[in-house]
Length: 153
Image (cartoon, rainbow, N blue to C red; front, side, top):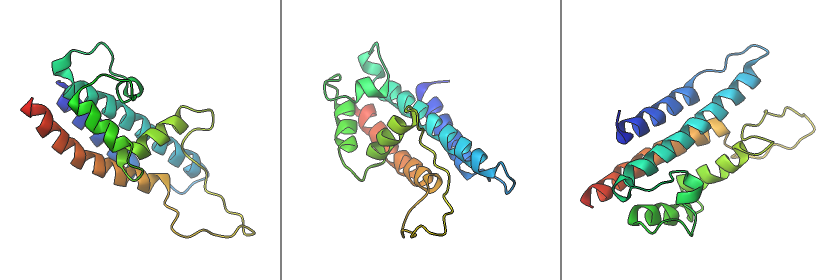
């Protein structure tokens, strides 16, 4: 399997996890959190596979996203494009980096839904599941454009 196929496979698998139903038994909240964090971990693997894919011509010794996308990372056009994307607060990559920091922290990325009748509901709160789905789709659109640019080199 080549890097492009692996990237596609990981994105597909992450999407499959996101859309799986958590069920309605007493384990549903924990199952939903497990599905969300698993999908997020696959999204991270897809990002690293993408980085390997678009930088294969440079033969880099390192492919961790935190190294390659750091400001002091390698000076490659594809990486700079991704760094610029990550700097945009509304981008899928900015969102993903924030979620991955949470995923690797002691608290994790997934949250249990709170059902406190005394708490005031805040409108327009989108759950991690929906955010994952939207950002996976945005990533797939951007990856297509990035691949075209990479092929030109």
